[in-house]
Amino acid sequence: MKPLRKAAGKAAFSAKRAGLVALGVLMLALGIIGAFLPVMPTTIFLILAAWCFGRSSPRIEAWMLNHPRFGPTLRDWRQYGAVPRKAKIAAWLGMASGYGLFFAGARPEPLPAVVVAAFVVAAAIYVTTRPERLGTASAADGTDGARDGQAE
Image (cartoon, rainbow, N blue to C red; front, side, top):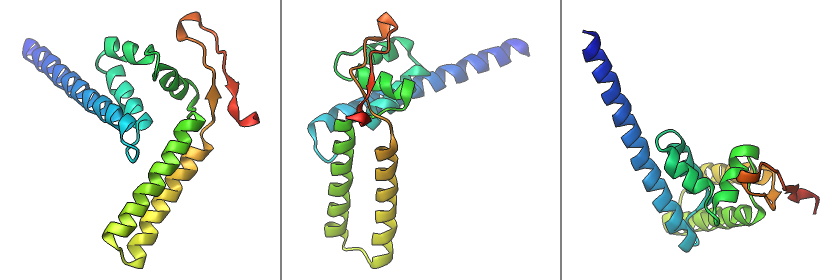
């Protein structure tokens, strides 16, 4: 009976790992697409991809965290919950554009328009209140090298 349980546990772990890898690949693809489409976010998809890979593929997670383009942003988020100012501005513009497209395309009644606007405003407040980190040094040297961007 025990070998059967052990085999079932391994199969469940493998299925969970495979699912997280697949979800991570999807999030990474969406993040890359978001880098080229102005109304689609990039950072949140990369953060979600790193989270998925952190629980399923340490090798891919390490590649993302050490990537020269988006590694510093991911490390800042993971370590400090920080969002760079450029990402905040892109998020605000994306949310405003998305709400504008929703409002123009759906022509919602007042109640749905206000409910959606409340969610957009709540998301904008969340993004706004995240700290900013600039000039993060590489994770390999163990130094922080960052300064708080809000003092500027």
